[in-house]
Image (cartoon, rainbow, N blue to C red):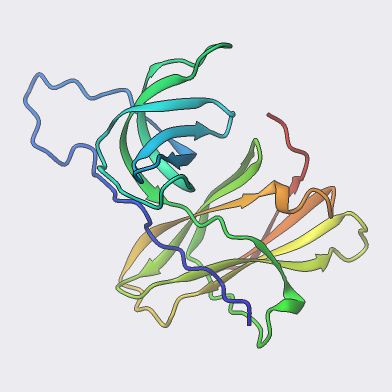
Length: 220
């Protein structure tokens, strides 16, 4: 069986505002969004690449993360732009926090021997397309077990030659539904656009299956 990858917090998360503030403290104008983080030769986070294809070199990394050198990670990050990118140079930014986002490959359903689970999520908080990605925040009920997610190519939509049916696999590992937690997922359109003109994403929630349709055209 082709194993569905784990959704884990692969980067340390620093809570903004976790320290006591003085009365005259001015909160930084951070940006929170899905990004791609690139690491340097020592495993430090060296740059932030936005879904608008803007690159910020990291001036100060407040997460102090050390990851696999010279690699790319999808994450939801809080960062403070300092200098904007120009036609001749990258921008710069301070990185305040980063939480890992699942961005595994799209797997053909036929290659998943034994099937896959579609445990319901509580709700779809948001889902949108930007640049080369379809990003989503799903709310799940969790306690202390690790949930797994996967992207399953379930063939072409009935009556359509050009729309891929993509199901979100979810295994809650029999977790106790103690509290609500955000799960971040990011589908790479480069895995899809050669096979279909559009994609219908199927997500099972507590209210039943929900469908979200997007064009697979990549616009930067």
